[in-house]
Image (cartoon, rainbow over all chains, first blue to last red; front, side, top):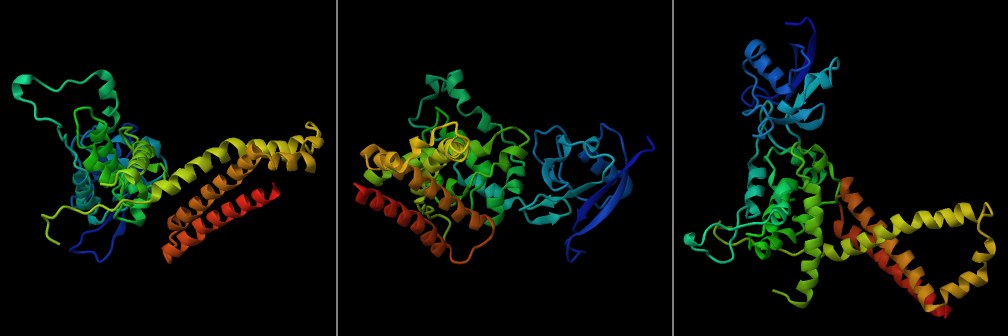
Length: 245
Length: 125
């Protein structure tokens, strides 16, 4: 073990003990290959077993370990102490979410937003199994693939100033997910989903700050998905003027 | 409200203002730097002869139908762009009081000045 150490500030909150969150500082042995998540595991194993945080895959696939690292939403497994050393690292639960305990946040609203956009293929005609699978050309797949890479980590919601101001806003990940299904050639649910898009709390709650796309660990670019949906919504608005439903 | 009722969706009228905002933004981005370059640098430095921007020339331009249209578009659309930005900027800054009045004042101002410029150009003919 090296002699070098790094200080880590963690915002702690244990609802049964603390009336409000407070910062606790830990000193962790520093190695350049240590991720923030591994540093947290070191703290839990050797310094304070009571500390709570979510994690699972350790390789930016499960989307569990989202947290604010020095005020920026990041995945704990994808950010390394060497990026901050010798400065101290401060860890806080994801912004814009209620704290459940320590670095664990309540994701209920986020999950509900994801569910609200009808995130499943709504087929046009019911094909019989014997007719074989729905086929897609590489071009048709390229239209939505990027937006299907979301791991639901919630970093974009922690980054979004509009979600911070108004929790009714559907938000970046859910709208990118909506775009993913609307852009899929096998899907026929666009008319249903456009009603969600067209609302004030749909795409029109977004003012294109673009921070969601900056923090996205999977390069989903939800801001682009939302701006493209704004164009679709504007077309839908024009059509709606002549053909109200 | 019971859970089994279908959610009612309310369509936003934002596309109208977003459209004007977008068009104005394009114009502002493409033409404003050129206009500043010409009127603020190239003419004062004598690179462009200022006779091209004499009263008679500009008046003749503004009183032609295409010139009037260009002047109207170049004034009105960037104005809609600006006031849309200000309206949403107020929300971003956390000024939540009187959102409807903010809307009326912002877009009302853009509308009033657009009409004003239109009338001004019309009476020059």
